[in-house]
Image 1: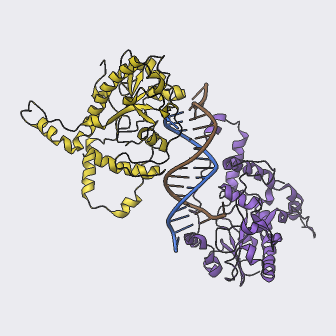
Image 2 (image 1 turned 135 degrees about the vertical axis):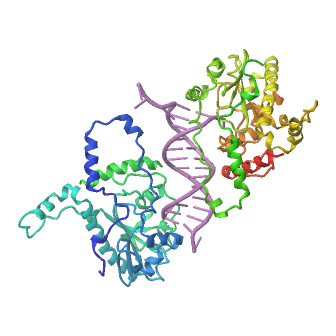
Image 3 (image 1 turned 60 degrees about the vertical axis):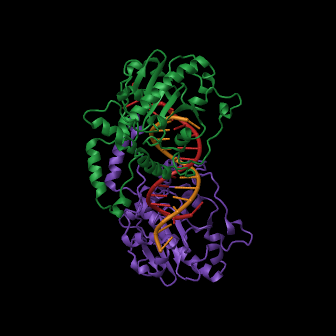
Length: 279
Length: 279
DNA sequence: TATTCCGATAGTGAC
DNA sequence: GTCACTATCGGAATGAG
């Protein structure tokens, strides 16, 4: 790994972790008796225009339309650390501008011969695929580490780990804590809208302000999301020419069917997230 | 005609006629050179929630859903003059709560045996139809008078009329001015959503903040709008059981086809209105 | 073809 | 299945006490 490659550099622009003051205040509110009318009348959290809080260099990439990922592959050094998590000769790893989960990175291969292909075609090349897998393995670890950093304090499975860490002296062998790597998934979209090959590596919670539309959700929770371990694709794999999304949205955690009701699903994902992070 | 029956009482809650100060200021603005950028950037006039500026008695009727017109027929005296333009034993005439043209009145027959029928059925009764025609003739004159009051100052055809009116002495015979009655149309909807029979009498401009949706427009500009002079309907008239609107919207004045593009049509109607009132 | 509110759906423009 | 913006289309309720 090269310069900047530290999990602590991973800093989502749309972090969903509230600051400590907010949490304390929220908790105080929850302990009051709820006023049902106030509950009904309270404004839904605004869908904020996600562009507004973005570093200006990254914001400029959005003006390139479907070629918006190219600037990262060509000139990664021009972006702030908060955006470009790692780069070397072959890859650039960035925080997704519009993360669809608590942690959501993209691996961008820099080879301009390969990176204009879809995964289905680019990964026919075994050597290229092997290179990508190596980077993917590293980035999965980064994502897992970032999950632990962000959510570890909520996790029941982390209690022995935290306790040992706080002990004096710190034991030689720490209890393992929660297996955050198992919460990470990676792959490409069968029919990406961005022209440059990008491997998504993200937590599976699907909890994010940027998770707004049906197709956002379906693109990570159906077979439209081609996992890295599925490559190279069988010759007759239907996803070499993907048709349409299934219309029904299924909760990734409990399996409940939400049809096309995105607003309802969003509320539900909020609840699932609270339980999931406490596992 | 009975109490209140004066054209000057007709006062739309959504009048599009600016007050004199506003007009003067607008004219000063028009004489300046336009800044094209400012023109592009200026916010579109908000679609205001039409309920907010309504007298409370009238606002209450909207809670009755499809029976919202009934209160007027039962208790017309409980409404302000700005709403109820005229009433007698047989009819109540009101300003439409959501006028779809510059002037838009409704004639509500009070006979509760008749007024729960659609026009197609109620007007099979020749005597009832004759009564309604008599009232319709009066209300058309009211609408024409109100058009003259509101738009006369813009109309080229009114110039001789206004000049004579301003002369000293006023001539014995005034030039006729614009024939506003020919701009008025009247009829019922083939498939009304409100349960009580209501005869629309309105100017044909289709220019109003309340003209928002495709079906608003189509309901007055297609054969869905059954003119009073078409009653009683022939036995085999298709509109005794009306199916669906045609989907394409046609400008009533120039015949241009706007497909389903209501926003575009609205902009266009704005322009047509400016020309029409100046005729 | 009452309105209003919300949300799902659809097209465009960025280049 | 890039986003953001606008507008169209579609259903449910008719909205505290």
